[in-house]
Image (cartoon, rainbow, N blue to C red):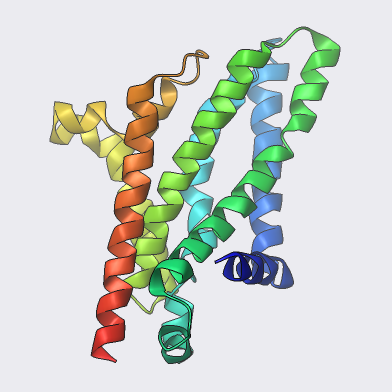
Length: 227
């Protein structure tokens, strides 16, 4: 699996995708940092991540839409499915590679925290809890995006499916069911913004992630058996 992770991370940065993702994330994070924090004179680092959830919905598909769709479209899926490595290790390798790229992008926001330290005293605990929750949110988004990529050979369709899912769990949940609203991904992340870690939210995020990783493994195992 480690070889797959290394290969996938390398592929992100041998193509423009990794740089575009990190660059877009930092550009938009900086704009949000300026408008939501500096202009208002706040020292709440977590405010930036509250708005960054929308950014995450829009750009995570850049990482996930080609994970399996590209393999199928270019005809290299057969090589992938007949490789000596297990389907589980391939899926996990692709997932963790996407997560590593996200973590790299989030790590660069330390620059914004350092700026805040020169202007005041930002709460370190709240900031760390917020970042932790944001990465859990990102992992859930990546797992679904990977699943979407596994069910279609069209990268654009995979991206549209992903964004639609993210928006439904955010905007549509209150209109569908109060129980869905309570476990909506963004709603769960919002509970990290005050610096309090709740086991229930952590378990829910991890469960979301595991479910879609397992579904992706099932889809790819089925395709392998058909081949």
